[in-house]
Length: 65
Image (tube, rainbow, N blue to C red; front, side):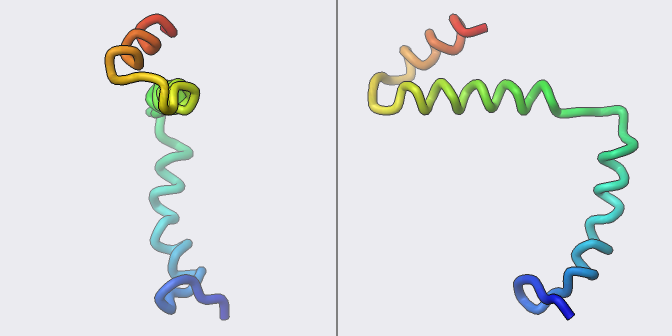
């Protein structure tokens, strides 16, 4: 029997998350736009690491749209 963290079996994890997975597949809603914005923000933050403060980051994000 396969165990995950804290002695919970893989079967139990799949059973618990099955309803959420089904809902994600059949739901007409998507958070793709949000994920794209977050990815863009993280990319700009990585590029600017150590270079500037909040005002420069804000200018880069507004200019990147």
